[in-house]
Amino acid sequence: MSGPTKAMSVITVAALVLTTAYTVALGSSGWLWFGWLVLGVVTIGMAAADSAAPTGPRRGRSRPGPQP
Image (cartoon, rainbow, N blue to C red; front, side, top):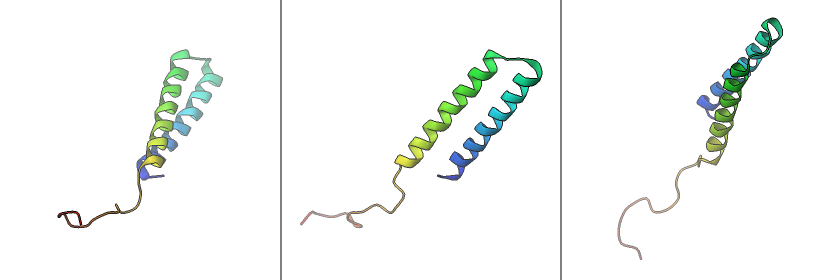
């Protein structure tokens, strides 16, 4: 997992904790939970895109030129 994906995961978990605390203290807010759900889906999408990206050097010819 790359740095930005880890940061997004930490933000998502922190938002879940804050949303839960708000719900316990002041009552449920549908928009707050909807916002957290959108944040969670974006985080999952980032993690999926990060895991699908190639991590190593590209294989193949290092110099352009005619094919043998």
